[in-house]
Length: 193
Image (cartoon, rainbow, N blue to C red; front, side, top):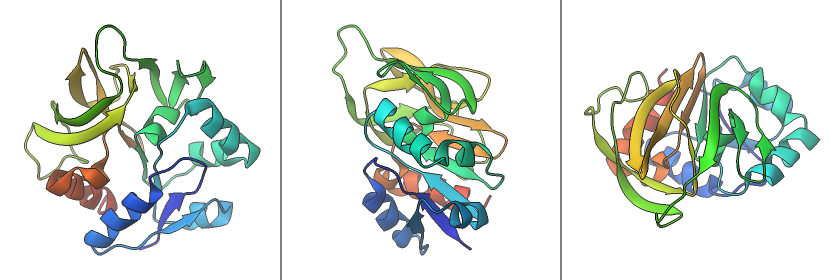
């Protein structure tokens, strides 16, 4: 099984590698087009800012590559947000895989949302072998609106998409690599798709 992690200027790759090691998997961190295309599964993680991340992807033609991958692809946090149509963060056009918009939390909420929150209305296959509600670990100031591709929801001032799926593309707003046994199961589910 060849696992690839998309290398771009967005952090948290090390914690994803450690989480994969804990479940007995190794992954190659790469921005090489041929390696990404030939991988069995691709993980697109990210912590950072949408417009600079999109610029980096475009400079290396990774934007069109990711959109055209045919194997299962998992976007995590910023990775999932970049798979949406548009982000309010610096008015950024994203990859357009998921038909939804990324918005900034507003009002009197503490921003970013940091910590454990309840993930509800979960759907398989990413949430197989898990209860319909589970706690996961979040760190984010922006969220994806609910849409037809929503496969889990979370409440933080508003109800938002904590997971998305369209064809071979999956996304989670929380960090499975920091979400204890629930996150490990989600990563296992992704790897066995």
